[in-house]
Length: 295
Image: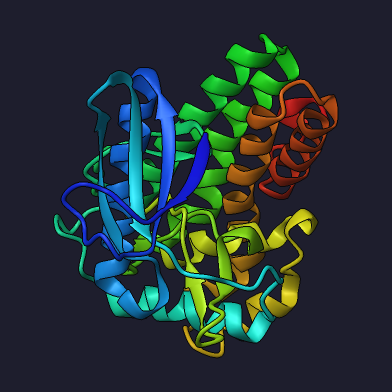
């Protein structure tokens, strides 16, 4: 994908500062539409802390090339503090809590993490929705790496044992989840301070309506330099879901999305697949299914 800054586009104020992302072929259509819809949802919820979407479309002279365009905001390329990251993310969640347009979990279009499509089909059950997203990632990972019996077994146990064990209690014994808007890719590269205001700005989202703690899974991976401090700060703003004793397991379940994504994105680097398998083994054991995986 190519990103450009531009100041002259038909149908737009000629003096506007704009960012443009360009992608080719059919994948580009889905990616640009998904990016626009996701960013529009974030902007409608927290306009002061995200870039303003302008539009998406196809080049007149090149029907295989597609674009997404948004307002340009100059930002500092620094890692946000745990305090600022948590304050911004919690604001997104609290402002959208319980406002899913269908009352369900999902999103009305396919979105992408990098160039990896995410299955956002609406579900009334959070457990079912999360399993659907992860199963689609497992399938894409297997296409790239080939079938591996141990990994296949771990993935099955994740879906059949770890998800019910750690996400099931969120929707049992009278407990329910109010869907909120999830950014889904809040690593420090996608949330930075604006030069003009020093307020954090979010961008490049893969939005959907889900359980607020799903956005915290990225904090678990040391690659992203957020860690426990960001979690502690977040829970100063939003209460931890019940049962609180299951939080570490839930967070591990959510973190697997990012380990799977890295295995897909960097399929030629075997280290990422190895880390994915190691984390999955640890989680499956935590869910009480280690012996079933012969670990």
